[in-house]
Structures are given as structure tokens and as C-alpha cells.
Image (cartoon, rainbow, N blue to C red):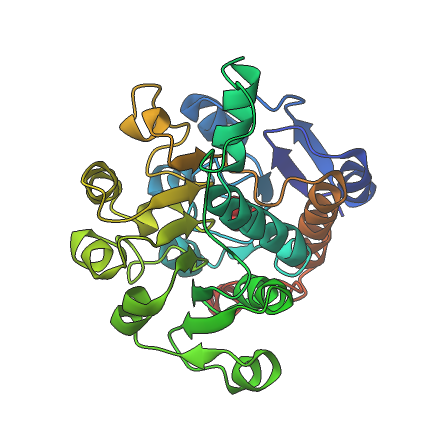
Length: 330
Ligand SMILES: O=CC(=O)O
């Protein structure tokens, strides 16, 4: 039997490459540079599998160009770059990499929270600018994290990992989620709130939802207006969960105290985006899961998902296992 063909349009760690190479023929683009759309279309032409980072979109045009495609393995926990209904209709299994990045991403979300509360980035820039003329009681005063109220929106794996960190800071933990999580309530002392109530009460609103039609622009002008004027918004989920123009407006008018962002409506963020000019906004370049160990673990997980799915088994992290049934009925 001939080996399946897998298209890998961006460089992946050797550990993951080796797993794929043992079982598949790989068409490899050994660079992290963005893949032009026409290269994706050419790359998938004879591919049985596609292993991608979330910057590559798999839409109808890609599917139309990929008659043999059976598996798409995303090296990310989020999979909003994939048109899941279209994949499922075609019997193509999609997989993601949950679990391996939970703690790493929670660390980063908490780092965003700490950085905005204690003005870490602003203070660093200030010292490096050479303007510091000595200790002053009001210099770079921020707000306490310890004992404050955190509102976690999206109490999945990462949300719960952030709540565990918040417990260490003796924070009051509120959460909002599609469904209540009695286990998180019991284990973490987290209190469920309808979204509006969470927004009214939290000092730090931390977004950790997947991007879905329901969570797109979940936080808009109305929601920002519910937040306390001294509260902060932290987005470690996906940019489009927030209406970015409404956020810019709220920050300009001082309706919230600040924001710490790892993600944006458009990535990379445009150099003239007003958020980049605001001292009370921390801006990171989508690095939630960016540690060496976690990036390797994500790629290895993605490679294993691919190999398992190509062997005709249900892969450990199938996001649309029903696609296998669709295929079986063909
Ligand atoms: O953003 C990163 C991911 O979804 O893993």
C-alpha cells in the first residue's frame, strides 16, 4: 500500500517531523514564513493530510483544491481557522492540540493580568527611556492583584488553570461559561455569574473562550460599559471575541482602566492601530502557548493525531468525529 501524502506548509519541530516521516510522505515547506494562498492550493492538490498552524485557513476554496484530503491536523487548541461544517460534509477529520498547552497559556494570561495591573511594561519603557529621576511615592502606581476579583469568561481547561493561579493570589473568582461547571465551583471556589453580572463585578475580566459564532464580538460597547471604570480587560482567547473599535473607544474615554491583549481582530496588528499608542494597554504578539516545551508538545500531538487518523482510527483529539461516519457512508 502506498504511503499517505501529508502537506506541511510551515516548519515544525524535528520531534513531530520524525513521527510523520515514519508513516507518510511529506511535502514540506521548511520555513515559518506565511504561506501564500496559491501555495496552499497547490500544496493540498494531492495531499491526504494537512498539518498546519492556525494562520492557515482551511475554507471551501482549499477543500475544492484538495480532492484526496482526509485529515486536517491543527497545531493549536483553537480551530476557528477551519470551516468545520464544510470539512465534516466532506468526511474530513479535523484535530487540535488541547491539554498540552493549558498551563503555558494560563501562565501567559496571568502574566498579562499582572503586567497591566502593576504597569510592568509601561514602567520598563519608562526606565529604559532614561526619564526616571528617582523614587517617588506616586510613580507608576497600579492596583493590587492580591485579593481582587477576577472574572473568567470561558471556564474550560485554560480558564480553570487561570482560576487555580488566581486562588494563589487570594482572589475572588467569578466565572461565566456556556454551561455551569460544578467541579470548578467546588474545587476552586469559583462562583458562576451571568455575563453581565460578571462584567459589573470583576476587577479583571479575562477572556478565554474559543472563537465561535456565539462568542464573536461577545464583548462590545454595551458589555464594556458594564465594566467598572477601574477594571481591566484581558484577552488571551481570540481577537474577534472583542469588538476592537468599541474597546478603543472605551479606552479613549476612560470607561475602563486598561487592557492586556495577546490577540487582535487582525493579526498581525496594523502598525497604526490606536491600541499600540496607549500606555494603559499591553500588547503581545499572540504568544499564549509560546514556550519551547509546549510548542514541541503541540506539534508532536498534531503529528500523532495525523498518523492515527490516516490509519483509519479515531484520533485522540478529533474535533468532528462525526466526519468519520460521513466518510463511512460514502
Ligand atoms: O492560539 C493558539 C491556540 O489556539 O493554540
